Image 1 (cartoon, helix red, strand yellow):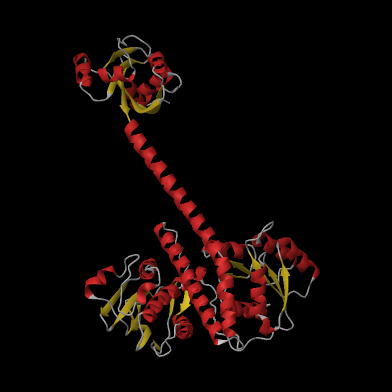
Image 2 (image 1 turned 90 degrees about the vertical axis):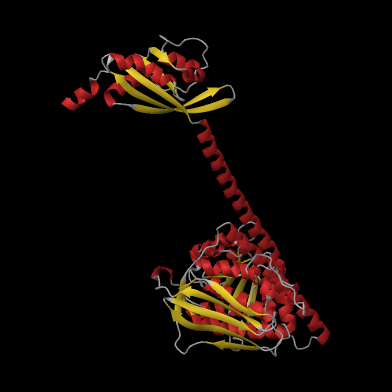
Length: 520
C-alpha cells in the first residue's frame, strides 16, 4: 500500500526560477552533468558531458540510450526503466565502463530526481579511471609480490632439499669416522675438518632460509609448553661436545638457574634456536674463561634469560651494528672469518616474534652478555604437544627388531646401516614407495619404517598413507631435507608417527626410535 510519504517523495516540483538557473550552476562543475526527462530525452548537457560522449554537436533532444551506446558504454539495460525507478526511489547510482578503441574508462554515474512535475532528472558522471588504475596497479603489484614470495619459498625449499641430502652423507659419515677407534690421527683430523665444514654449510643454509622467511612474513610460530630447565640442560650437553670439536675444552660452560623450575608457553624449536645462536656466538669469540647461561628472574609475567661470556667483546663505536644483517666484526684473533653475519639479526627477530625483547652489555676485550625476555603465558591446551628428551644412555639392543629404510639414495641406506650397526638391528632397504608397500605386506616382522618423503614414482606421504591403511600400528618416521613446518604437518597428516630433518643427528633419531618402540 502506498503511504503519504511515498506520494510526497514522488510529487515534488522545483520553482521555475531555479530550473532556469540550474544549467548555469551545473555548467561550472568539473564533472559531467546532464538534464534528462524520464523517457530518456536529453534536455541539456555541460561541456564535460560533451567530452565524455565525444560529441562536437548538441545532444539536446537525443535519446540518452542511443548516445550512451554510441559512446561505447557498457550496456545498462533499459535507460527508461532505470530513470523511472529514480523518480520512485529518490536516486540511484551505477558504475559503468566505457571502451573506446584500446582504452577503457570507468565512471560513477549518479541519477537524482529534480522535478517530478516535469519528469526531470539530473545525471552526473564522475571519471574514476585514475583511481581504478591505481587500485588495479596495486592489486597487480600485490599479486606479483605474493607470487615472487611463493616462488622464492619454493626455490629455497628445493635448494635446501638438494643441499641437505648430500650433507646428510657428508656430516653423517664424518661423524661415524670420528667414532672409529681404528682410524689414524691424520684421518681423524681430516674427518673433523669435513664435519666442521659441513656444519658451517648447514648453518649457512638455515640462516638464509630463516632470514628469507622472516622477510616474507612466513615464519610460523607453534607454541607449546616448554620445560625450561630440560632444554637448557640439553643445550649444556650439546655445547660440551661443541667445545671438544672446536678444541676449546678449557673454556668453562656453566648453567645457572634458580632451584624452582619453570615452564613457559612458547615455540620450542625457536626457543632452542635463540639460545643456540647466542651460545655459538659466545663460544666462537671466547678463547679463555667461561660462558654462563640460564635464566634469572620472573618479572611482570616475563622470564629473563642470559648468555654471558668472557670473550673479545665489541668496540663501543660498533655496538649499534650488532643486530644488523651481515654484521661481522674483525678481532685480533680472527674469530669472525666464518659465519654469515645473520645469526644475531635472526635471533632478535625471533625473540620479538615470540613476544619478548633482547639487549646486551659489552666491554671490548672483556666479554659480552646478551639478555632476552619471553612471556610467561598461560598454557593453551589446544597447542600442547609431547616434549622429547635427547639424552641417550648406552646403545640399545635392537637385535630382535627389523627396520625398513625407504630411500631412493643408496648412500642414505648405508648411512643408517653404519649408524645403527651397534644396535644389531636388521635393516631392509626399499628403493621406492611401491617396493616399501610390498615389503610391509609380505614381512610382518618389520617393526619400524624410516621413510624418505621425496622419492620417484610414489612419494613418502602417499606411501605412508597406504601402509597405515593395512598396518595402522606400524611406526613410521618421516625423514626429509625440507626444513619447514609444512613438511612436518603433511607427514603427520599422512599418518607418520614422527618427523626428522636431514642432516640427521644420531642422538635425535635414536631417541625418536626408542620412544616409538616403547609406545608400540
